[in-house]
Image (tube, rainbow, N blue to C red):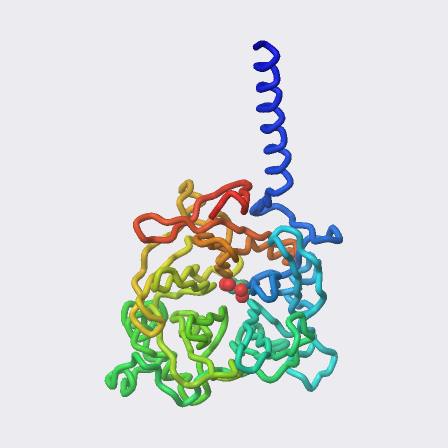
Length: 381
Ligand code: GAL
């Protein structure tokens, strides 16, 4: 009897040990805010990025920043990394690079931010859009650039940069708004009258002929294969969601103003149970601010703000855990796991900026985020 008990105890202990080893081997730990070495040991350099899943592999695209300390905002272009498990990332080199050709808008010294890549099933091509600012012009140009490639890692062929939807009114713009004559120079910037005029399209009308400003951006492919470009427009006061053509290389001219006058940027959009959700930030440059989340029944339907998604200490909520949203990633094979991806910017050395990845959680239908110093992808469904 004693031997039997002993044997049973040994078997149980052994099983626990095996389970422990198995779990350790399988765990995939994310450490938000830590340095994140790639397979060569260098901190991953794809800031303001997004991820696409293709042929059983994740590809992470983002801003490849120069490791400098001199506030130099220039960089080499768009970096790409690949991974099977979202934790170990291999550097795939540049997907798009700035050039020394001074006749190109992509000349070294220009700014490429928040690049995103989507796959077009009809054309079999990968399409990249990015926020593009021209050399020596600060953030004045407010363009969006597009590039295309037959292979996912590139190199992508640069097509052009533009201000979208020149000469076209958004679908949710009234006749009264179209015909208003008030000008920015008539109003005191920041006054109540100015705020109302901005909400009613002051800057949209100003930019009507030349095309709408396009800064912080994201892309979204809906379940029917239609793709949308979402960007901070109208002097960063209003987001636009603009439909892309079937090849994803241009705008169709259908676009919708989202939360007019609310000054949102860093848009990251996702769909869950038929509803569309949108994480954004306020507009404080590299400094983090309280994040925001909104919901809608359709991309071209009115959006309802749901407040600040952060559930941490007062200070954490004021800064979105020290970060700014960039993408929401649905994890393959996991029914409910969506990863809120954000950047903790280090403006003195943008290359060293950190990645804040947290699982999206839910509170009465509202997506929320909580802080975990580390968490295991394998533990979530
Ligand atoms: C932020 C924006 C970043 C970058 C930065 C420059 O507001 O989200 O992508 O453009 O401003 O100051």
